Image 1: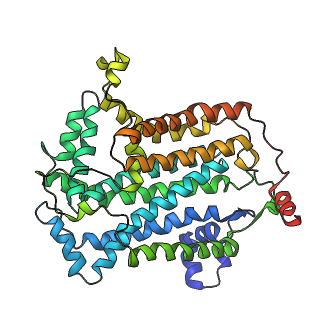
Image 2 (image 1 turned 90 degrees about the horizontal axis):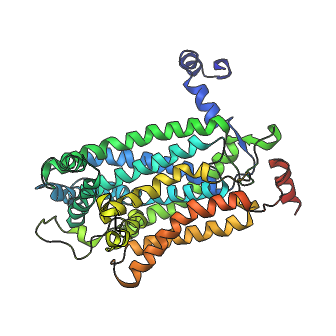
Image 3 (image 1 turned 135 degrees about the vertical axis):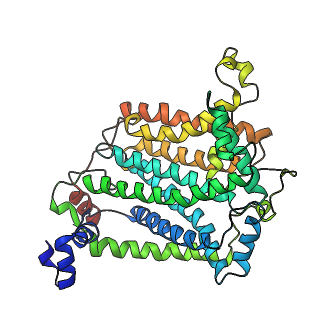
Length: 420
């Protein structure tokens, strides 16, 4: 393989360390289904944003001071005094939102086209682990500016770990580094925020290995049956990804330059004050659906169930629902028993999917509202439907839904589409 390279230096290196051969196989000659649409762009976009976040984070860390008395001022210094510090911070701050946008689309695309089904179960599970690690990274990163929302968000979320039986209080004290959110907490979160992106990078590498093992899924959900079903990744999909990247950068940089604080919370531009509680503690937008689930457990949960106070409290039930909503996604390959992957050939599941997506967006809206009145009731109904869809609707449709006939092959589907 190394003799195929014309450059003698590359050929010499590749003969001893076949890194160029691996790169060529993964990004040039890699056989890819010929019918991938633009929804498949978001995996590569997520990888690009991850690199941007790591690089901008490293340069920001060179100028940040993880101390409760200096953190807020050091962020202001980055914005005002460091050369292009404002650009680094806005790229990083808005990059977090863009990262979650592309990953959310990537996840829902996988759910729509059944990319979690056999033999890609591990690919899906690693993807959910990446999502969990992203959430942890984003949470500890949100505390670093040490504004009002940073401080109180850290106080509320870390307290949730107190519901863990026996060791809960010890976990909270370890996260705090003491008996309240203070300087040791900020130091721990800074260290974790610097470390976790590299954990994400390692998980992404495993994700790619698992992807290349059985190749990409495709809009028909039909497996590759020969060379006629595939085309080389380059130049066909590199051009397609480049176009998608251009559109994405217009949006990403549009927010960065023209609306940099669009996703920010005003209270976080006020220095942290342990003596003043914000009127409404709200996490970042990408946490809002799970925040709504956390608050969905009624105050009379204990009275309603009688014997359960001995076993679990309302607070603990909310935490279980919040984390369970993500962990449950790992079991989707086994909850969905349908032999057909793509929702394009599952007419009932397609409508159930769009209802699930709408319900998830509704949960995000509810999470940003005060937990009272109609908003609280709608949040509880939406939380119920989230679990009902995954635990009841998906298994039921997988067993009883009448699906449409599948094309014989990817090539047959492409030819039929072109003939129309």
